[in-house]
Image (tube, rainbow, N blue to C red; front, top):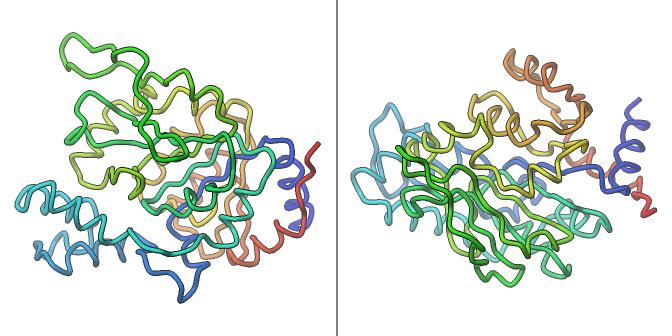
Amino acid sequence: MTEQTFADIAARMGAGQVIPYLGPGVLALAGEACVVPDSPLALVGKLTAKTKVPHKVRNNLTGAAQYIENFKHRSTLTKAMIEAFRSDMAPTALHRFLAAQPKLPLWVNAWYDDLPIKALAGRAGWGMAQGVSQTEHFGRWVNYFRADGSLVPEDTPSIVGEDAEMPLFAPAPAEAAAWSTLLYQPLGSVAPAANFLVSDSDFVEVLTEIDIQTPLPEPVQQIRSDRHFLFLGCRFAEQLDRLFARQIMKRSSDRHWAVLPDPLTKNEAKFLQEQNITRIALPLADACAALAQHEPATA
């Protein structure tokens, strides 16, 4: 059954119908070469190594980030995030494998590292859409960047609501429609401009609107239609992770997969059932090796 599952995923990937959705767990594939945080707990440890926070939020990433933002300024938080993720770390074999796929319309990277950007560097005709904080970019949900890291300006001003003075949608620049691959980083990224959604207030703004899809880039909403998601290095034990995954995959196909070797929590099991996600109970390295053996057809 597992063999057939990977053959099915590979065939659909070759047809451009599979959207890889990477979480922080994929960084563990680098082993000792991993020099950036590979989990929320590892990241909060980095953030609090130089800034003391109350004990009750010491292991809570968004809470600790909010404390630093409130009492040490947003610039201190941004600097700490840059220090945590800026590195010369090379992409893993998984990143290189995905970047080499002939048909890769959308790649979601739900963490702050720049390994997908590095892996895509040799590919032509791609660009990025990154979530941005309202604290630093009020009135914007997303920034678009070209492959060379340059910012793509908006074609038209954002439409603003009467009361909230917030955009009713995240308009995409016209040139984004021509990209053969869109790298979507919903939480932001260390590259190219160090934009991060990480504090409680960052997420409150997004979650207020995400149920009606407002913060999601228009191209993401278009590309995901009838396509399948492949979750790698993700866990869904936390509500925030489930919310983002649910909203990003909304109105896609009714068949998806997630590599989850460890025992599931009740919330994870319920989430997989609700979203029609087939669990692949293999270690991530084994699953990636199995997928690589089934080279996607390019037809």
